[in-house]
Length: 346
Image 1 (tube, helix red, strand yellow):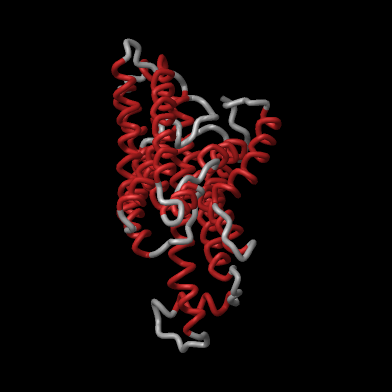
Image 2 (tube, rainbow, N blue to C red):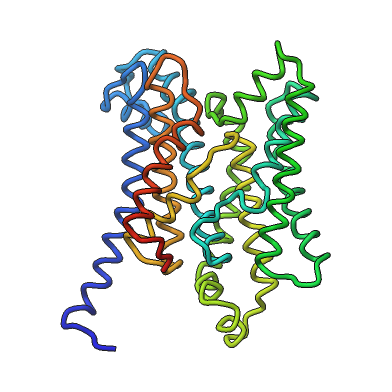
């Protein structure tokens, strides 16, 4: 391999610039989002409000502005970034494991299972935390069923796993329809339908502190295994020749993706396209190497869903469900990416 003059210094410099950009973009967008909304708050005021929590600053703002920034916008912004990052990194991991750029976090029926769990939770109890818990549990159950069906087959392949996920997803989708059919049309049904469309309107510190540890733990596992996902993306023969335990490696990665996705769905409902679109964007810019692809997907995914949520809460007087915006924006852009890349994966 020929090394061009100056590459020794250019590569570390490029890495530093990339790291600064991937950290700086979410932080900058977070601050802008705290200023942005139906009630505009000047950036200096937002900056002072944030600083007042760590230092003694004389207030130049009123109580309403402080409440909007600290109690309403900050938990929502943090939750949007966390969920966007979770869906994006799990999408990147699934695409590497399955060696297919068209798969996403819902490939094994996770979203359908979590949707059924949330609908069931809404029917049983009014508690938001109980609804989140049910969505998380049934997301895990859905993947467990997909893995169980795969093990029942004579040939345990990735194709069998994907087909099992489609079967489980179809069953849970039908069960969601059953729940909607029997739900009270005046009370429960609108809540179920609105939740399934995805929203962060109910974001709070309680929801953030409930879901954040699980999602962060899952993302840390995926980041630690990003080197090995490169091996899986090369194919089974190469992975076997390198001494990797493919079955165990896939299981760990799939379970980490499942935990992350289930937690995200349980907090925000069904939000599509993030896990498919964001890894494609990052792959076009940085290439298919997962050691860069996955950290970058975390950053871009956080920014992308935060932008979508900013539009959702400020575009109209009635908040637009997230899944509508992600589909309207994501589908045409994804079509452009496919046309631009010709469907090439690597």
